Image 1: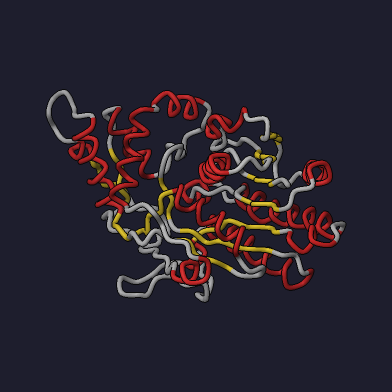
Image 2 (image 1 turned 90 degrees about the vertical axis):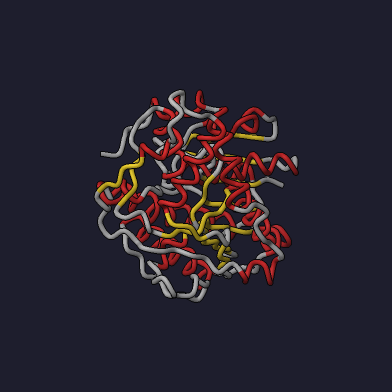
Length: 346
């Protein structure tokens, strides 16, 4: 029995692999293109385990994907591979179309070909799990109900549009070809090994370096924050218990405005690593011009996965963000390592 995990050197995929080996010795084959946000160091000790095999390739490389499937005969494929930074998608949408749409299509076709060769319980029990985002649903008003699995898709950025397209492809491959797929749509993740250009690690790292802490617009954009380890536990639950063809929303039940998140991070830094001059890191907050088409609010209704599969997040935002800040304070060498090779968003 083997799992194939694509996008395994990214933030969420690497967390899944690390967590998997904490509870299971089942072999994992990792596949990652190692673009700017992918780094083998995110796999931690998992990368050196004898049960772990790493393949440096894109999901769009059909020849490599076919070879990996034929050689390792996985019982499931978990697709974490994606371009995911909204600002980058606004500046250069083509990479998002190539990876998230074309890449997902090619991966689906390779998996469908492989699945068609299986027999008996191997075919019946096989799963393709596609990891997506709440951003495909668009934006919510302040009094709107959180996104449920039945919400219509209304993506507003090139990133979310490309993820919406990939979700539709996955659905179509199930309904047309019978491929046993599972789709998860998550809220905003945070936690250890988060790539440093995303909001929470960016604030931590800029604060420590005496740089401005940029906050878009008025900072009142609301997100539902999900600790990454809770997310990957949810993914494993869906893989083990989910019904093929179904979608499961995974959320943290933690709605908070961006400015409140930034202030909380500053408060924790003031406590855990106070500035020599005694001033608060919050003095470095700087409001900047809002990005185009910035969605105002996301929130996930995660009652279906709790009701049907028994999953709930274990971390509150307060416990998760403390763990996150502590991890980044203790792992600044990792931050320097991954940022050294990453081109900045301009």
